[in-house]
Length: 347
Image 1 (cartoon, rainbow, N blue to C red):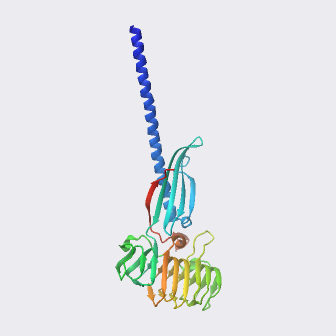
Image 2: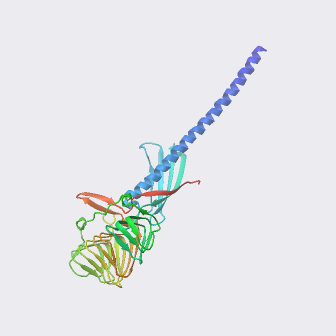
Image 3: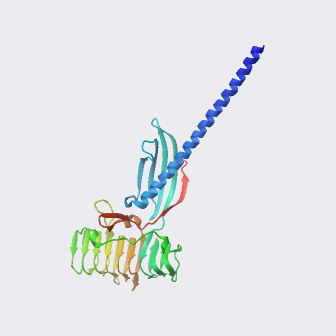
């Protein structure tokens, strides 16, 4: 009887021990799964930051793109895939899928979807106090190294010493020092010219980099794909002029226009630009002008009638500059970005 009692006690203890061991194994597996899920969540967030960094620092990544099989540590079994879809002029939808591979299978996964907003993104820059006329519409942020008198429509924040005028921007007035962005250091000698002209007028179609060493006029129906450099004053006298920024052999954007003097848009004339416009002098608005990219003016705006629309398009405005000989640097009108939302993908 004593032996049977001992056997029953040993059997009961064994059954209870096996139950505890089984529950411990389950708890251990749950803990490992929680650790794996947390690691994959952080890895997916790393994928989002990877995309954010590329968008801010690589002009070739401002459109739709994707990368696959990225690793934080070389030789590790953890990977992430990133897909970026441009949903607006300065908005991006980003999907980041993180996973761990074991024996050819994915044993863990985390997927995040986020909306990235480029901010600030400068559409109009001026190095002096100026007035935005009522017929000017700006979609994007504005920088003014002085007092900005706004009578037009500004769809963004304003970085200025002071703000006045009859209309308020849709964004906020911010201090000049809050913008970590500098005037693009572009020189006429930074580019190789496909054609040089000393004529007083240019007409027709052209592809490449066109350099003009003196005052020149675009009389109308001029089409330039590449870059127009005017080392003097440029006057637009006719309608139907279109200038579209091209790319160099490395796939980097040219500025659409560089004018070392003044840009004069005469009455009843028209100019449509896709890309960055840099004018070291002033811009005189007399005709109808549309700029999809950005307008950077050294001496502000003079109004003599007409209208102008400026829309920030960073994918066209990001360029390569040469602030010092032999050291090209990427320049972009975007000084930052933030995630408007981050959601877990439940699929």
